[in-house]
Image 1 (cartoon, rainbow, N blue to C red):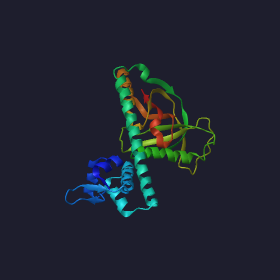
Image 2 (cartoon, rainbow, N blue to C red):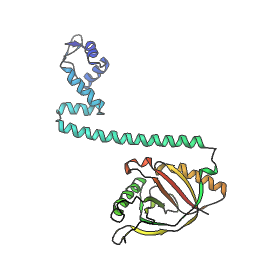
Image 3 (cartoon, rainbow, N blue to C red):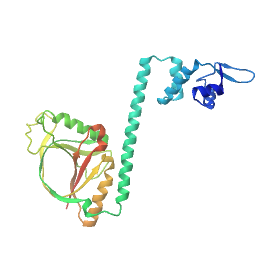
Length: 272
């Protein structure tokens, strides 16, 4: 038997933590002297203590650790709990990656403030396009990303297997409402033979030529697009031009839906 100080040195756990676990009833000493209050631990208790430490490192709180130890949960149940913990950690990592991207974008924006030049926004003519599209009003950017998946699945039987059409988004709303996005997602199918989509929810149509399109590139999620549209706004204020029709987003780099924060998008605003 070891006194608490010696046991803490062997277990590499502070005596303060051992006392705390004892007060919680989570890990009690093998023997406690009623007269002196000294705590004594058996070497066999190391395995139980190590299990507690492992469960804590995996992200379980102390109440969950206590329940796991008391219930003597089977390995299969513990595996299911670990899978849930893994999902939580993956979501946290994804959130932090997105937050890091936002921080980097804002740093870049701060560094460029006051140095805006005409080169930041390009004005050019945009030719007419043939598109295969789906249009819907969605309640969020996340729902809009789901619409991209729907477009991909519906277009699959209509497009040649080897084709890699450009993805295009058109914002039809005359004003921005984050919870009511009137958006059309489309594949540009210029020169690609597309059968009649009759019976398919997709629509084949032509986009008219735009004589003057203000263009700027963004990297990341649409939630951060305001950092780029502000550049276009400053350009319009300086040039005296105004918006003239729906804006478009052309995906120059389209990653998987799970990694949309890596998107490279050309933002286009028709101007007059």
